[in-house]
Image 1 (cartoon, rainbow, N blue to C red):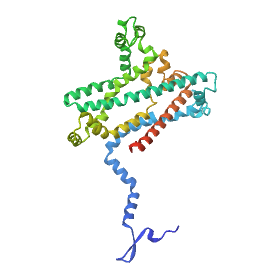
Image 2: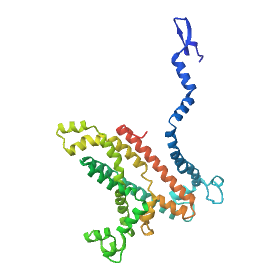
Image 3: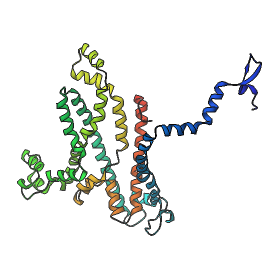
Image 4: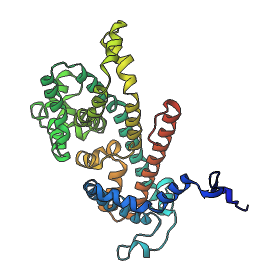
Length: 355
């Protein structure tokens, strides 16, 4: 379609001629000097952009560059060659993991992988079920403490476990539930449960961490103790941002403390809850393997082994790096699908989403 002069010029009645549209002149000038304006902005706020450099380097070195090694999922592992030069094997590793075909030990490997995947999902699901509401409840309790000094003390006490290293925390847990030659020699938690009659003396003496039935409970309880207080910061910040007039209006209507929580506080922080829930669902299958690695034993593999420890055992400690990469690849792809699904459901249900 041919352009006319009126498409980019306007008629000036005073001069009787066509002149360039002033708005178009401004748009052309902005487009022409776009990168110059960008550079001026960067130079003006160079300190802020300088602070971004460490974060960018971290993402490049630990998030983007390692993606190159994902080629190992589709190639025969050969440590003497670069990943790009290794022989292409297609989806053989994925077939061995999913269906147990392709080699003599593939069936056993597939069984162990699905066991690790089931344990990963169950540990994450229980953590979401019991661990996600706990910070919200703690934040609600903090909001009801009127003494600033008392609230500060309570907050510090709940935040402290988060700043312990994983090694220190798991060592403490191991000491509390350790095995012993007698009830008096067992861990404090084991002794307490045995005296209440909830476990037998034999189980207490053998150590709770040596019993597969107790691993998930120990993992979840220690995880809530470690992170619940620190995770409550986000929810408490959302709560203190609520206008006092909302509480006053509820009090005039005769609402008590529980009613204010139900009809004022929770609806006001609903968007924060939804966003945090989506992020939690996104990391549903990303169990931190350090804690599991320090707590589990061959006797508890049936309930403790997760995809990350499975990959570590066969990829780093073993010689099946391609198989370990394929396992992590499957785990991460499913996690990505969970994020997309949770975000879509949240956007349709409450008009609140990450994107």
